[in-house]
Image (cartoon, rainbow, N blue to C red; front, side, top):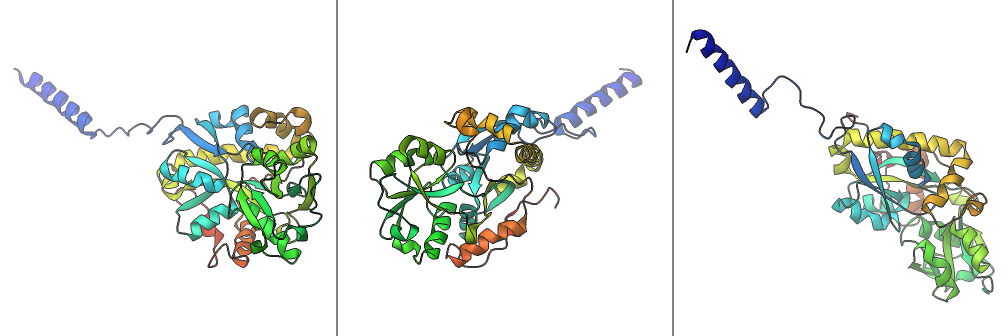
Length: 326
């Protein structure tokens, strides 16, 4: 073999070895393609209520697609119930209410808030009773059973605040769990005396069963209360910073659209809830913030401390996921 051929052969073999060992100076490609995202398809938990409408707006408008992201919505019954699903990896992200999140964090769970979702407005979260119920005021709930979608969440906190205003405590009632879609029939059949109900089920139960509103739970201490956001485990946010940022950009864009044009919400609600366009145009809605604001969310944590949901003060800033490198 000539000196030239030996040199070429040696060069070729060296190149092969470097390639096999990852020693090439050429940088590796993105982990999963799609704008360099660590994960391009994610499962996201959401309730069939107006709160997470931006998830479906972002889907329909192609905001996720623009980020190289495929989102698969999964129906859940509440934030507390979804927590084990994100911990196990069955869900990547999920809707949560802030009360359930802060309870979990107070108990040592490594959960991060990644985006805002919904803030209360008047008559969007009401205590309701059957049309022929003898209950005429919140004070009349003493000794009664009240349904909430999940225990120890924003529903029980909001009802407790109304009980306090009426001279009662949470020990004066019995809270039981029931998913929002099932509350109406359960109350009619006598399984409970009242329910903490949100839209579209407020309007649906008024129409179908003649339910009466006993109290708007988002008044007084809970006026304009931040209700829900998006959560992930701390581990997930650390492993998927680019995927997280892509989701955040898309959902923020959709939140801005929802907050500026109610028609976008009305068009989307019938696609993932059991309400028609007519009902969608008449239900009462809260607001859709596009950025997580620690000062606003701190109100929730402070209220939880007052009512014993937390054993010690919680700095909400520590629960909000920081940007990659932040």
